[in-house]
Image 1 (cartoon, rainbow, N blue to C red):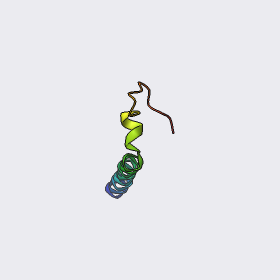
Image 2: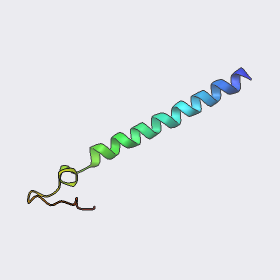
Image 3: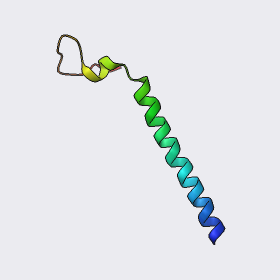
Image 4: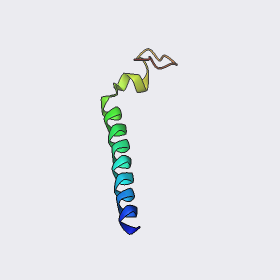
Length: 48
């Protein structure tokens, strides 16, 4: 029972790490103009 719990914990931590790495890659890949909007002061952010 303990072995399966450790395996499940390892798999869960690996999946959690993958989620955070994917989120970090998405933040790095963002263009700052997509976050801030146009220089003209557009209210809506342009969609990629």
